[in-house]
Length: 197
Image (tube, rainbow, N blue to C red):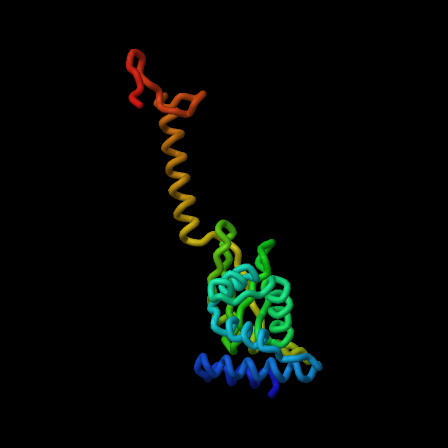
């Protein structure tokens, strides 16, 4: 089955069927290349297909360890790359961050909001942009997928930054009013009184 038809079929199926279809696609891919479809590869694929969102090799390794499945980091790396080559996973790099993976599983194209402060990633869908790209004549080029990455500051980090800015402005006001000692940045003790400890 061609990959495009496989991805379309995945959209219409329940999660258990996704795993079954992915195993079939992997077995076909490996057989055509003269590679073995080992139990370890099948197990790793099943774990990948049960994973939601983006994950790194370290995240995936930790998840496997928590499930009691021991496998080397090298094996995980090679197997995930095999799944990327097979079309079951996408490999993504956001800035200088570690490579992250996400399941293809027939989800529509989506875009990513990446916080430059905490590194959080949020998926969004921009239907106007998607329609524009999908209706664009690209000649003999057939796109498989596309993604847009928008970098900025998430609401949680912006709130924390504003709180820190407010606190900093408060400290500046205290310093200017003479209530904070310049050399120690501590509140001044009025002359003749001792600080309580």
